[in-house]
Length: 439
Image (cartoon, rainbow, N blue to C red; front, side, top):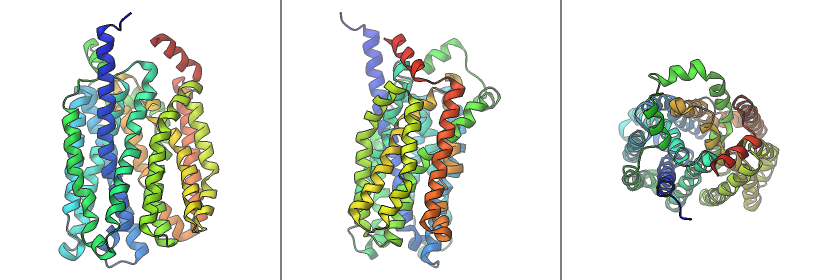
């Protein structure tokens, strides 16, 4: 028997929505990752040339955090627009804003040319990046997860999470190439190339997103007249418990990538003396492995239950934090890579499931606002401070202090996942029941 036309159309639109969400978040994360890499390798001498190396790094990571301060604002603004007016146009706007901000950073003169205005403008454009990605991630999650059947929400959300390693691969590959330049040329102009290249990716993403249909669940909900006038007010009035649980459940998901791509890159190159290009290649392979592992992790999570799988993955990651540093401190590239890969991939399993897990925690009329606010508030309070706080712990307590800080973030995340699963009734049994209903 042939598949009904309506089902065929739904499946086609679901596929297009997932690809568009994946491509858009790839661009967004490319822009974010090139910033974190540049902050670790170039921003100190370019924007803070009068400071010592350690202080310049700390200030560079502080500008990195500026983007995270703006993310909850973007989440609230674009969450409101997405819940009231729709997901599609909101996502076009966030991608455009992100692209403009990134391109402008690539053209920004250094402190030697325009003095104090250089770091001031850097912070402004970084905040604009954060404002855009604050609305981007939640909308992309819903674009991918609301297009298909409810039993495949986690799988749909996984395609959004694939944008992180894909963007990381692109960013690290481009930086690995420009890192081949002599140090003087790299600092003078080489680091700008990845930022300027973003314009091409943004144009491709915009073309694809403008051709999408609106989210099926949003359209159905609007037809019933169940929209709320002020989603953020309704969220805190009726759904404040899952919102706060979701903030903690997102903690290491945001911090993990920047801990590796920003802090570990800085630690291994500046403290341990590992060659810059070598470490960029190590991180490139880590991102490729994450991209391969996440779809497999999602399928496992669908069988054993999302919450259970996330907690096990996080527990494995916590166990390997100290060994990762012990291996890194040997200075042996193979051992450094092994430590990073084991810890990073354990966390990537949790990260693959996180988007769909959060999307199921909120009703459709406040879902964009709920997912965006929880994730972006976590990014501001926890994720964005990770490179800066890790550098502070390193300066004051050595690598042991950094390892303890990382483990604490993982424990907070486990508590958040368990609390959200309890509040919303997630279990392997409930997820299997939904698959049976969809079948």
